[in-house]
Length: 342
Image 1 (tube, rainbow, N blue to C red):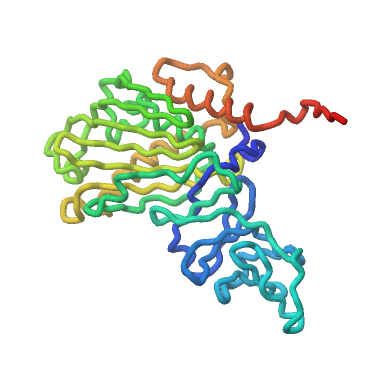
Image 2: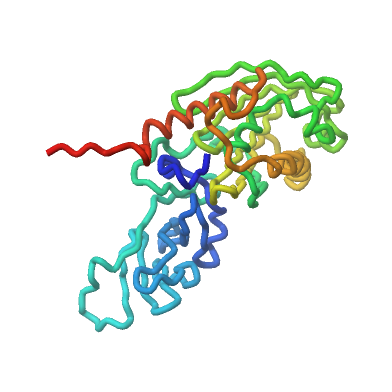
């Protein structure tokens, strides 16, 4: 599945960058092959336009923010969040700016400290709701914001794959003596998926401190949620009541590249475990996954007959079938004749 070839994928929300990055002026980002410029308006809200001035196609992201609008670095034309040109220095004061002077605007919002963009006016799903993020006592820890050379579907399948722990994560939490995956309860949603499992894990000494669990072996109660197409939450609850929820998105930059956005939410304090030590352990786990995932084919098939499977692959099979159905339902095949009636 080449993400840029399926317009239906433009009808979802994606986290594209930390909102703090916009404090220094306009920034560029490529989403599904679409070049964007992002900035903060006068009221502090994020805005997103196509990163091309309608005059001579200069990148607006090379410009500056002036009076809440993004100003082109070439001739100084300014655009508001709606994409309308608000100022042309070369036009005399009082002369109306033509309505055709505009750039395509996209839906843009802030949530969980990140800027989210939808390239369609009619998204198929709302922004993800994470109830744990609304609990005042919980803390949100930004973790990773980096490019991976792999498809978002591979990242999502990997997140629900209990069979790779003892192999890929042998140095972090996998139980090498137990290669068989933990049993899962799988609950398909209309658009999405939930999986519940009890997973035995090894706790290295540093992780024992992070978890306040003085045992090298313990279990995780896991609730995983897939948000179509390329976001998920992994809610882990330990026997002592500690909750460690990880949100991960593989925002599609291009067919080959995904922007990994990850943060965690915990119901403890910095005094219990430092953010630095929590990120360090999750960094080890993420690096173990990244090494393997970047070796996989980026053109991940949604046709389940194209690759071989085993019973523990069921979550990934459900994902592929849902995405295949979306593509079939919402997109006209290029080679399908269009009937014209008179």
